[in-house]
Image 1: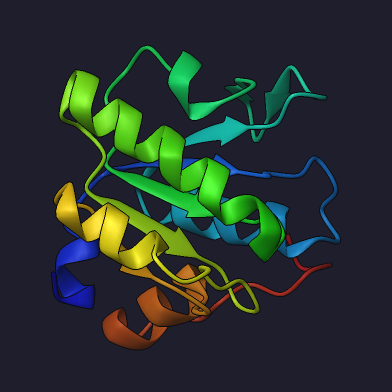
Image 2: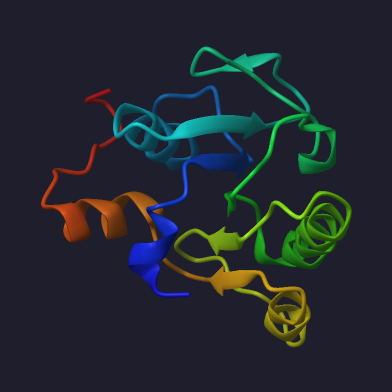
Length: 144
């Protein structure tokens, strides 16, 4: 899947979404929401983020998910990838796992995802990539 194709997808589950406007895990989803994407926050310690109901895991989300965006440490990626694969097998909906800047998949994760038809993008900021592709200005913490 080409990176441009990712932005044709509309529903993004944000694993590790934050309530704190000073964190990128708040700023990036806010930018994407303002750009017209449906944001589904995944955070077991919050009930609502960016005006959206939160869920403890992507497995609990009742609506279809196109992209699983990850703001969690690299060590947690294998578990998140397993959940994405499980959703894809059960519901056929997850098409992309996107690991934000500084987050990488361990060996074998890409192959496992791709074997299920799920594209992996790692160590990339979804907001910066979108802004660059579409000529928009990214947000900064503090200007939200």
